[in-house]
Length: 279
Image (cartoon, rainbow, N blue to C red; front, side, top):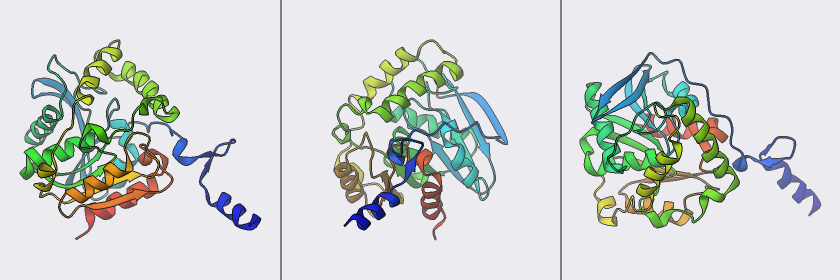
């Protein structure tokens, strides 16, 4: 028994001097990649930041709520070898502006369509994290011809899929604090983080709220993905979402949380590339 216990302990991914579990860590936000092109352009009524790198079949990376496109640095590096990689800072996030219109996933999906139009791209695959994954699914529901495959990481499709008081989890709380510092450094309205959080919080209180019928109507190829220790999304909700979307795959990444793409980028990228590049 003692040998078995020792073997199990040695198998756990550890981090730092205090042997913190990998899923409890929040690795640094990657540095901004060296893009081939980056711009701020007025789309759908607001000035939005986007950047591109590489060549090949287009893949759009959509970040999570409060974050910015720098979080995708390690995924940009993996994808740009064989894909045209596109990142954007969602409205109000990162380097992008916002206006008085209430935040909504439909509105942000329309921003994506405006960007694809600007880039003269008829469609793109989507890799989305949290809010970004929800935007990808919104595209599949409302703009099905503009989206190809969707790698939907840490999404919810109804508000009851969110774990109550997730913001009080230490890892998630550290992320919220970091996002505030990054907002102050990047945003065109650097002193308005609390106003921004309040504005987007009103969206989170009521959205998304899709029916099973709407999910069953999705025709895009979807991989539903989450970490096995997600602080914010209920596992049962993730499983039900995958079951409702026709033909969707379900993948649970071990020893990771809502931030798996930072915690274990090798595993995350392998899963992402396998899905995007499979026949």
